[in-house]
Length: 247
Image 1 (cartoon, rainbow, N blue to C red):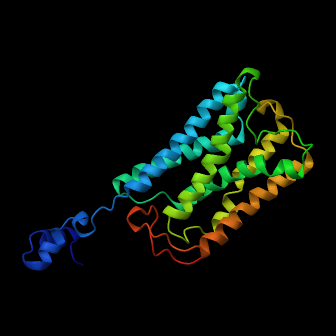
Image 2: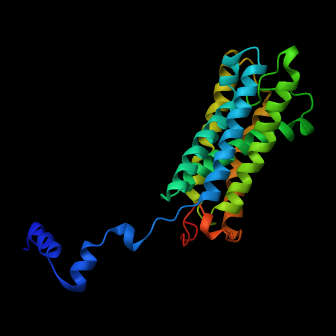
Image 3: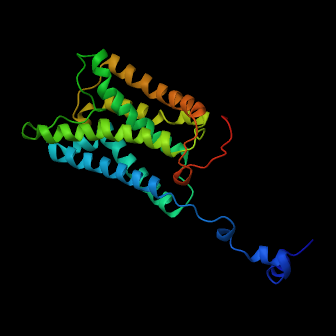
């Protein structure tokens, strides 16, 4: 059996093309590919989410209830994930896993859909813990701006980031069963401990609509991800190309 140490030493001291190739750093063979436009966009996305959270904190009479709301939690998760993705894109490191980025995307889109679409189907349903707490009487304008950022600007920007700056076919079938876990657990929390969120317990129809949406969104995202074209911004891509088909 050959000695690995002796083999390594012989490679290190080898001459000629083979020895030069063995001593060549990996970064020289595969140069770092930085993505400044993707990094800038994700940094702005993170800043928008944080700005919305700050405005929501200033407008709500109960910061504790804000922390317990689904919208605030997902906005914070998006801000952290986008900032980390911006750092990795700027330094040319491997992008954040689609498992993480897709989960955060589905959560912020779920909050936006429940805010904008659910009232049209259930107009009599009261706001639940999935929504932001009501603004204080003297801070209606600040609260409206916070909602515009967290429930319109940030979800749309996150969708644009996914569609324009990531390679397709990064999502996997197993992600579809993993992503709804957090919204469903949160729904159970809101049903059993409504006092902790400051919002009334969701009606049965509201709870079923939230659960169904949480389960359907990952399926829709997976289907779109399998057929959408590859972005043309090759130098600013934040996900690797050549990903294998659906598993």
